[in-house]
Length: 204
Image (cartoon, rainbow, N blue to C red; front, side, top):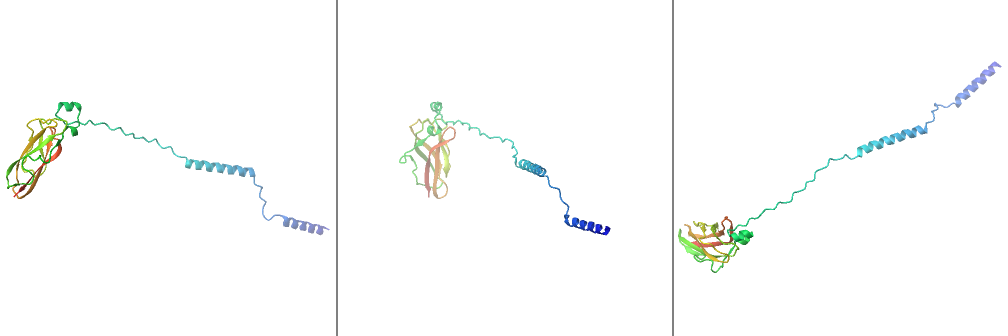
């Protein structure tokens, strides 16, 4: 009878052992705790992302505003008191013209010369400006072969609309060839104006 009970208990123990799970049973996870942890993680990531992409305020830059240009007064070169009072521009004050048919009073273009020959060239010109040609006005060298020519001042005033003869003393070069010298009228301030006057000779 005792042996039968022992056998029964052994059989029952083996049955219980066979029905027990092979691995330990894990506790059921807390769903609310998982949700809370995930929420904290999302908030932390959003805060870090916002910090990375938040623009940094730049210091204000100064705006350069150009100053308006200052006006420069234009001085009119004139020796005529009336025109100076009126403020006549230099371009209207001093000007000249000439008739191509009568400008060469002496020594027409192409006049033959000998080497080192001295000669006097005279041109006829007209004052077509608004200012009187007064003291300090005269002919000055412009370009070309100078041929020993020197500037010449006017000896009398030339009114607007009036004609005048202007003369320069020259000396032909010592070598054979064709030579041209250009001269212009200048005012008392040393400013030249009008068309150039030419003398052209041929040294033979």
